[in-house]
Amino acid sequence: DGAAAAAGGAAGASGAEAADDVPAPSELVRHIFDAHADPASGGRVPRFVVRMLPLDCICAPHLKQFQAAAAAFLPRAFAGVKEGTGWYVAFQSRAMSTLKKEDVLTTLKEILRPLNLDMSVCDAEYTILVEVNPVVCGFSVIRGYEDKLHECNLQALCKAVGLKEDEEDDDMDEDEDEDEEAGVAADEER
View 1: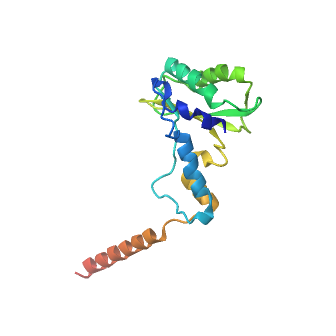
View 2: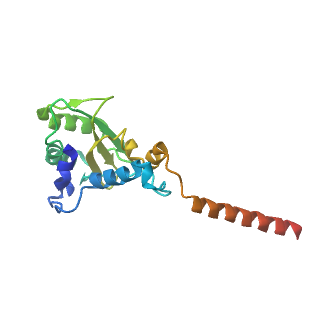
View 3: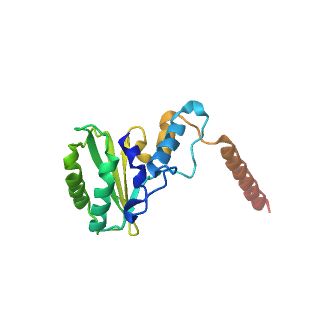
């Protein structure tokens, strides 16, 4: 897949290249989701992990830095992808106004125009995930973001394939509740 070709861009705009033997964050997330997608694997629903956001390329949360990082990263990420393939943007900004969705979309259109890829709102094969917060702007190209990866929501995937929560932990919680109830009853008798 075209996003796998971007593993070398995991270091982002910092100029340092990622090691060849270290997979990109999007590849690690895909591996984890593939392992949980098989109900026969005997896996359990992770209790403390909800969403995993793979950010293959990072930069400062400002427009000029985003433009430079995207211009370097996206052509490699879409290398080998057929012309006319659909893409979409999943943009999330948390407490930041220096990088707006309209500016990100304009930048992405300019960079992807020479590759002859189509922007698709409803049936995109690839999603460009852009996450902006006060410390960093990160983005990656993900195939199957809405269907196979359930928008990177691991608990939603586990629920969809029918994995169960850890029963031992549930039994411990019930025992603790019974102990609490017994303690309250003993206090009331005094």
